[in-house]
Length: 310
Image (tube, rainbow, N blue to C red; front, side):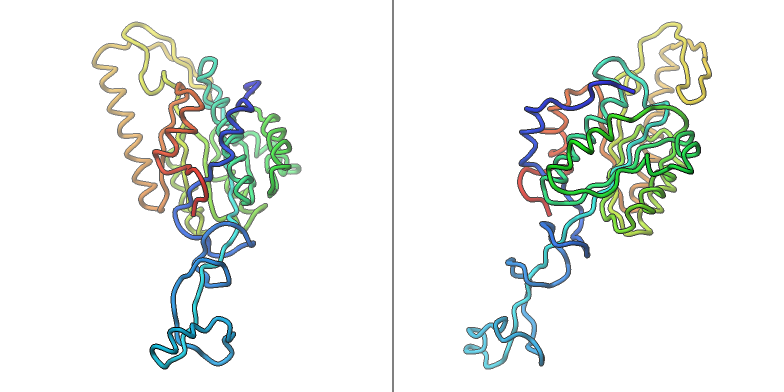
């Protein structure tokens, strides 16, 4: 695994005022700080409706009655606590990149930082980290790959310690990770995935499963600089991190054009899946400084907001 993955304390402190942006209101759950479509007793006005027998007299708008001669009651938006599930891809392909650009380390840093935004916003946080080989090898003790729901800032060190046990290896298992998360946290409402998404069919299956559970999905698509823009022309030895297969390639101008075309097709396939299942994909370059990603790039792309996010 990548060591020393935690963001620095100053960055964590700056993030305390940021909240994850949810794409639609929370439909239920625990009392908390997220807008819900359920009408209840919170302080934000929602609508009027006609009085019916059994309504509380204190909710009657007496000024409207004096004006219109009919009884109306005020309805307010209830507030519900969001239940956020993180899926962290720990397949071998994530164990790639040099120094600060290492994809796995970058994913862990993002998860650590955004986890702080979740619990600081009074939402519940749970997480799953795994790959095919890890989940298959842990059927009798699979819960070690699951971080059970927590809330409150005091839970952050526990979450960070859990992230610190992460090991990379094996094939991508996004659907299987989500299945583990749903089994442990059946009421999760928001899904955030930290992955290079190098298994488009698996991404499709995961998003289908998430949509069937009413979960709002955000894919944080993490690629290293060398993947976004391959090395220049010449003879190169490439290795598949998941299978170990080594291939000698000659990067000519035509080969580089073909690579970029295939990369664009890869993006299109993922975006088609996101549109189909009501999710969103946000491209993350692990070569970008973490503070810039968290404080500028993610807010610009509708993932984080300073202050209360609905």
